[in-house]
Structure formats: C-alpha cells, structure tokens
Image 1 (cartoon, rainbow, N blue to C red):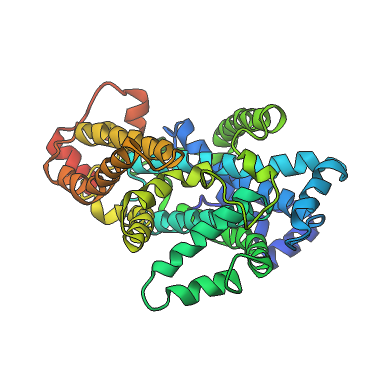
Image 2: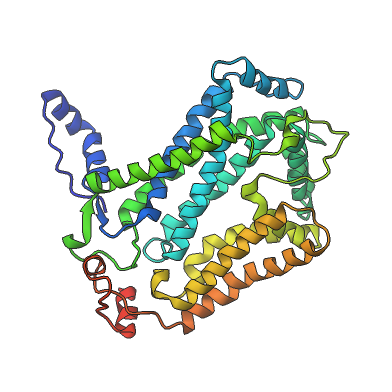
Length: 422
C-alpha cells in the first residue's frame, strides 16, 4: 500500500486546496514516501521507462497528427511533407517511429522480468492481468500505426493481418468487412485505423493508471520473492529509487537517441518508402519486429483458422500464468529447474522472431513448427510440472537479510516453501 503521507501544506491556499482535493498528499504518499523493497535491482527500472515512453509517444503523436492527412491519395505525401517541410518534422517522425520499438523493447524486458521473478503470483494477479491488457492494447496500437504511412508494407501488412479474421466461423467475414469499411483495404480502412491509433494510447494511459494503483495496493515484488516484514526491508521511493530510475532512464534514452539520430530506419522496412500499390505485392510481407514470434506461430500451423487460434492463444497464455505456475516460490533465483527452462523459453521466443522474419520455405517451416510446439508445451506442460516436482533452494528470512547477508541462507527448503506460501 502507499506510504503514510507526511505532506504538510505550507500556505493558506495550499491548505485550502488540500482539504478539498488532497492531490498533492496522494502524490507524496504514492511517489515520495512509498516504501519499496530495498533489494530492487535495475530490472525494476523499466516500469518508469515505460511510463516515460508512453508520454513521449502521446506527445509526438499528437504533434504529428497536426500535419498528417488520413486519406489514401494524400497519406504517403503527407508523411513526406512532415519529413521535408515541417520544422523538425523528421525528428518527430523518427522519434515516434523508433519510440514504438523502444516501447516494445522495454515492455518485453519488463514482462520477462516479471515472469522470471514471479510477479504474477498472489496477491498480484490483477496487477499482472492489467499488464497483459496494456500489452494487447500496445499491439493493436502499433499495428494500426504501422498502416498510417501508407507504404507498400503498410498496405499489404494490413491486408494480410485483417484478412485473418475471415477464418473465424460464421462472423469472420462480417468482422473483416467492418475492419476494412468495405470489401478491400482502402480509404475507409485508413480512416478507421487512424482514429483507433489516436484513441488507443489514451486507453493505454487509463489502464496504466489502474496498473500503478494495483501495484500500490499489493506492493512491488522483489528479486528474492519474499514479502516485506519490517521497516528494515524497505526504503522510501524518493530519493533512493527516483535517482536509480532516473539514471536507468538516461541510459535508455542514449540508446533510443542512437537509433533516432544514427540508424532511424534500421528497424523499419525499405518497402514502406514505396507508396502503397494494390496491384503489386511485395516479395516477402513481414510485420514489425515485435510481432515476429507470433507471426512465426501463425505461419507454422497449416490451417488458417488453426494458425489464428494458435497466434492469439500464444499471447493469451501470459494471462493464465498465475494459474499455470503452481510453485509456491516466486523468484527464479531459487528455482534451479525453472531457471533452465525459462532461459530455453527466452531462446525459443527469439528464434521464433528470427523465423518470422524469413520466407516460409524449406527448413524454416519445420523449425517454426518445432519451436511453436515447445512454446505451448512449456506453458501447458512443463511449467505446471515444475511447480509440482521442483525442490526450491532455501529462501532468506527477510528482504533485509538478502541484502545484508546474501550468502547466508536462513531457512531449509521446507521452510522456504512455507515462507513463500505466507
């Protein structure tokens, strides 16, 4: 829960305002004196980085909208107008386009950190589910944004992905027609995607607020996975974690700036600098890099409907993690078998991303099918079995002990299990 606010208004106006709307006191209790586990490492800084990137995407997006024209005969030229004629338009566009990739890099690190350290386990299930909702909204927003430049890959990517909905029995064709606004990807489609791309970031912001609220109710997890037991286990958010988060943010922004200023098109596709042409299909249609693992899963299933189910199922499995992983120990640091399979899973996900970027021919099809099978087996078979049969390592008695005496375990494996349950 949030820390007890010690904020005392200094002026009569501040006291008057605080007595009617205690906004400053809420901020003070939530972001100044809020008690965080004292052993949080730099993997926990990506939540703050994501908050910054969300606001950066909203701000740059709002400015770009002032110069963009969502009409099929003008969209491509309006992007060129932004790049060539608008003051610092090139910077805004590159910051926004690469910002989407930075957003996904940070969110994948954030998700895999939560996976490894068991941040989805009780009492944080709702916190994790809200994170999954944010991820789904991000994927929808990114896809619709990729269509807006109206280049070749924008047009054909939209055509391929939206046509997948036609595989759904009974209602599939109606959904596809509604998404298109007609019977093909055209001006109505571009207008729909533009409207939703502008709206969804504000929906993401709303869910992020709920996510932060849920975090302050349950409290953040920590690398050892034991709960806070005394004031010795915590430190105030400011100045200890504001400085740490600030340093991590600066390092991340340097990485971000390197892409924006030196290799702004590295993560894009050259075909998107060719105006959309419904009569000329690109040799190899691929989505943005952050969708590639799921695109590989889609292509690995021979049936169109089966591929759609597998693709969406691969994403939704993350929502069921709190119930698939039955181990009473949270942190992967104390789960030797889980740790091995976790890193295999990370390698499989990266390999699926590579396969998704390659043409579906030769051995790539077979490799994709094998890795897809392992992806689902990991969630549905391996993870539940590990929770039943794994013997965890001894847990420290408290967070403070893990910091002050990290090599001196205080509990037996049986006691560790009991401690994690409490």
